[in-house]
Length: 159
Image 1 (cartoon, rainbow, N blue to C red):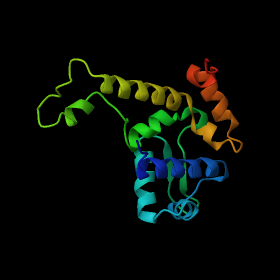
Image 2: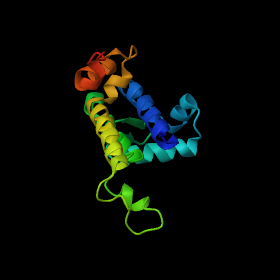
Image 3: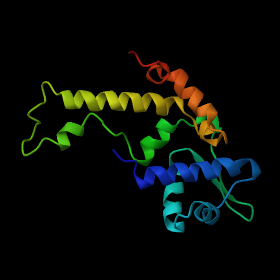
Image 4: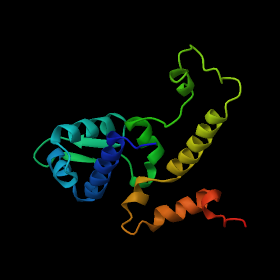
């Protein structure tokens, strides 16, 4: 399981914009330099974020990119959805059916159940985590939210 470069850099671009929104915003060149991403890739990612309502842009001498919503209103689940989609979705088994049109394990598949469970945990954490959590320099706000939101993380192991 891997996070794509588009997802990783897209989140990083959104964080840069979020951190600079209070001071009037930022430019593609500033984001590119701060994250060491090419300007063309930065522009592509910011365009995706803008078209999906996470980022606003303004033109002119003092123009640039700012958040379109408050950081606490931007859930990472939404951001990952537009940057790359889910790890496991309903049509997943259609793409990995082997040489057949339909997977031979379509009726009862423990592997599919496993992926569904993993996706469920990911969705839960991503839907509880906001951009504001990632903007917290200590990182504690995010971890406290995860512990509260996910009983699997806050329960002691049983012996």
